[in-house]
Length: 107
Image 1 (tube, rainbow, N blue to C red):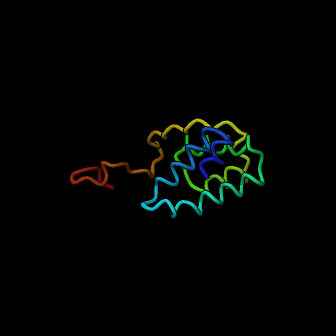
Image 2: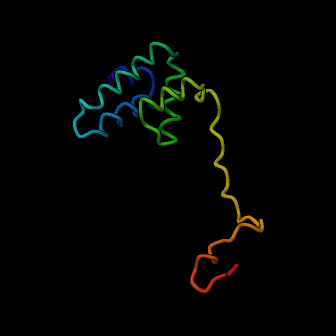
């Protein structure tokens, strides 16, 4: 499995190695790795490598993640920038943290 993943690319090899090392017994990760090899028969190896890179970058290291990335063609799109956290709303019905503290705002 590791030899096959090395023929695909460095990211795929790292992904397969990481999956195998995640489990206390390597045999437990073999089934997931066999699924990844099966995906390699359905998708071009360049897409497999791109999907492995995206999975490693996002921390989604699993067979299901790779399958989803390939099915939705996320390997062919650049990752989006993280959305910034919203600042506090100024709507009248939003109470805020002070409302819930003892001695805070009252209705």
